[in-house]
Image (cartoon, rainbow, N blue to C red; front, side, top):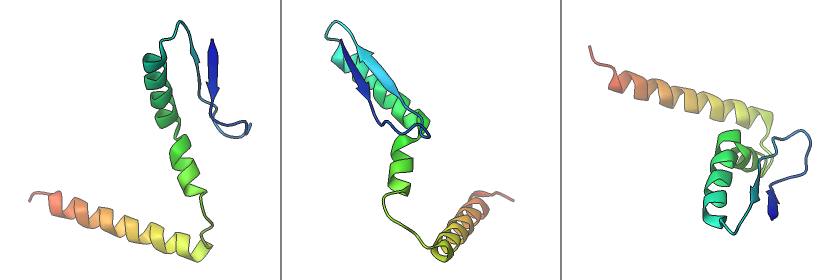
Length: 77
């Protein structure tokens, strides 16, 4: 039996999956699903490098405007 754990940080969600009877492909599939659902990869990408607070605000505003334009484009009158 093999136990796979992503991280040991107590503040982050800790998805893990036990592999039994050499059923690695099914275990890997469920493990990937757990990691995706808990947002571990997104959190790692977010913390990959430091963003200044002003740049964070600017990016947040730009993304909001992009979503607003997209919503207005898809809206039918």
